[in-house]
Length: 377
Ligand code: MG
Image 1 (cartoon, rainbow, N blue to C red):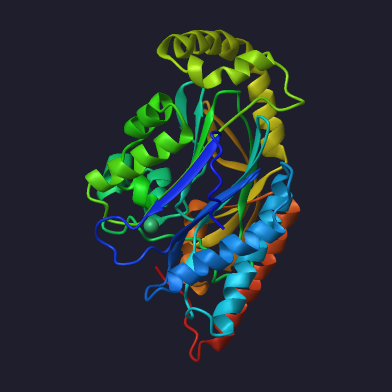
Image 2 (cartoon, rainbow, N blue to C red):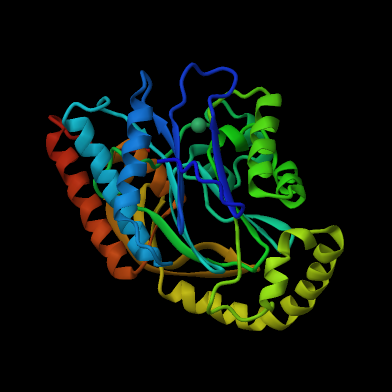
């Protein structure tokens, strides 16, 4: 499934690294669809999980930049991994991360679960566009761990969301506007655990073709120790038929022009544009936040918020909607850990539906406890 056909606009590669005996990662290049998956489960089960996930994604994914449809395809892949384990393929408890993208011109939609990542080299600047679903990333978001500490933390590979366990898996989905000449990178933690962002940025900006970028990134990860399987997909973003902006000739000459001078001009233009856009962006962020919701643990119980966690340029974009009596103690540890960081949904209605599921689970576990004792501090 890993296409052998060489196209100068995209490339992928997967390497076992220097420590592991097998490669449990998988990747998919099936334009406009791209994905990486990092299997877990040991005894080759991770390999089964990542392969099933990628195969299901290929059959189920939309051929257009439709974020919700891509999210549904990832949920289908989740169901396929769960069903496979139930039917004796692989092992019970196997799972996989998945970071998938559909690229249509300069529109990129992403669906993401786990600690594999998507990055965009946008106008010469590297942006990580996915949030890791991992214990250390949660701690960094809460401010209890620095980014640097998280790179060496003993639990850095503990993930809080994966395909293969929760039938109600929440998939992050979103759309990103790129520019012609940008580069999209999808990768597993075998790259990001070994190579820091500044070096990733330099390699992406300085490699003449995606193929050279892939080989170079895998090489750097192995040079740094290759402690895990390394999987990398690089896609050059081209001008789409509906995109405004650069004339076709400029887009065609993109790789030749990819030089320091062009990046500086882009950077200056970007600063000028940014000033004009901040007003619009603040309104867009507010409108976006109004459509979102999330559940989060506060003092041991689940609280429902409208909006998004954190802040935008110092402005908080969330509004407390409802404090519940559902205690996170009564939930499984993975769900409880996710709730500490906040579980985002696409609407208040979805948040209410998810809350009902958690409430039912909490009540079940309460009923299953033979001598229920109230939780006391
Ligand atoms: Mg890995």
